[in-house]
Length: 74
Length: 514
Image (tube, rainbow over all chains, first blue to last red):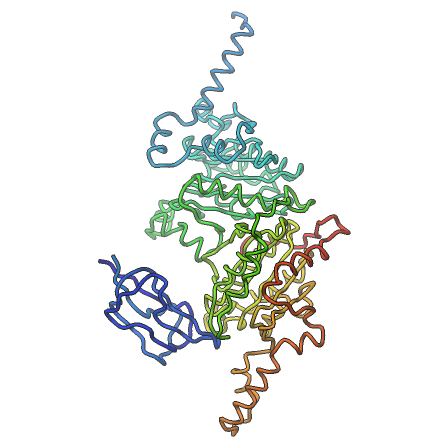
């Protein structure tokens, strides 16, 4: 088993969270929606796997490149 | 001394030919084969039309160190003329099995000749890179420097009279790296590296210990530096990509690009483009799918896909004619233009303007991405480089506003007469800034929620396309499914017929990276 960090591509805030720790996720599944520049920006699963850690809460401010979740893969 | 017969001299010639064709020897060639890499002559055979290679300098060798004369076939850089899709091209293939294809006196003369012929006779130049850098000890000492370096004041002059294409197919230091950075298109095979110096020299000079992949591998160039346009898995795929890129290009700057057949079904596919827009104005979608449906079927060829992903730059064809497609991509960063996206677009404008390729901009951006990171990266300078490049372009420019276009980004994406024609879909929103920001600026400090909502609703109504269509800032309002037909007609109207489809190339001497 290895882990992949899912990072924010943009500075903004966490608008909606669509997964929980332990959920099985598939590649390209929307995990979290961020808000930046008045746009909804989906954060998607890079690979099939299971949510190992969720490091943000709705309303949190986040920076570009900040880790949002850790997905266990393989 | 006995007189040589004709048969003797022919036999000697054939013996020398065989030796040259044997490159760096069986052992080195076998090692490459086992690793899955083509050798330089296999690469030439693969990338060129069958039997079209005419080699120049087959019998050349080192002319600096006497003892190298018999062990430097072709002096490590195989040069000549070939054809790709029936068109003549000039080509240089580095032979890493001969002294790491290092640069020395003879092979530099060979490259110089290929560059001159390509430029003076209007041929694309293809560079198959894999080289270790300057040859030692040839370049060492004051005499070496005086002999080898700096004797050609045009060696690194780039004025884009013909397309140059580089494939990075192994360790690329020295000339392979430098010529790649002067090229219009660069494809890199995974596992190759491209940099100023090798990891070994870096470690010796600074103590920094990085392997080639970390120092200057494909990921760095695809995602950070933007010096590479495409990344592929194999030599063969790289060479296919070289051929594909050239299929969009004219042979030289004084002719329009070639015209291709239009694949069946292209029009029908374009009519489904409106299905891609999400219902919510704030949701993203993948603009690459819009491009794919608007251009001729299977003609979309994206450049630098992993860099500045909030913008897409892609070659394509509309009704068989090459076009340069620029799109904001709301799938990434909401389509907000960040510094890498601006730099990517600027380099694409340089490419298209230099080779008479009309530009099509598909617009959906909330603006330039603002913030501390943007300012640290010099965003205002990058925005104005992009803007200046756009205004210098003399190829036809067309814009289609799909959804949002705000503020300065409206101008950068062709609004305000920065395109020859602007069409908008009825879904377009045009204003100085998103109403949800603007309300905070305009509403008085003591305005209540109701008042703010009223102002915002009014601003949203005023952002609809009808205001700008009414004052002719937008010249056409079209349904999404009409986009391809509109572009085809506008490309016909605006083709630069007074100059035979050839632009003024004011960007031809702009750098290849910013």
